[in-house]
Length: 213
Image 1 (tube, rainbow, N blue to C red):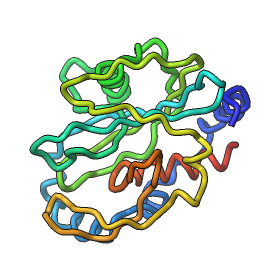
Image 2: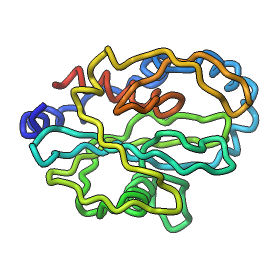
Image 3: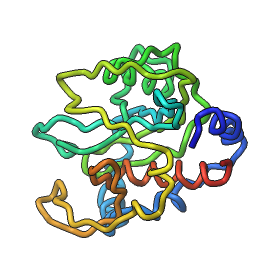
């Protein structure tokens, strides 16, 4: 989709109600409800993070979304696709500031270049015991990425058309953090399987976008 056309319509996303669990459930792993119940008490002390779903124009003025492939490490989200973002720091005024700061740190996009249009539904991630606060942002100009070498393996540029195309919703057998392989609903984007919390947040974004575009 042409970015100018996208910008004209996407501002209306501010007025839409959040969809929360209804949208998240479309891409939720089958074991999520069981895990959420298991972590019910632990959730009260969950760490907090902010992430950014950032849309921007390509050099050909097509609408794009940036995701990142995380480095391999000893952790539950090793080598997974996610949004730029990270843990709240004491100096952050709010979750939006966390998302903006982390976006600048991880992919090099200045805070001043991002216009945040909407706070999306928060999502609890049982394996890492994090409550994640996602935000929907746009940059009206092209992005010059500078990835954080310590944490980011690669930057993934996804076209809006691919995100909205239902053919890119798949079922895939993946290895979970519990050393068990299960079939989960997922997005197949640029050759990457995007599942779990990121897919659930993308699901809400996709439904909201289809309402305004």
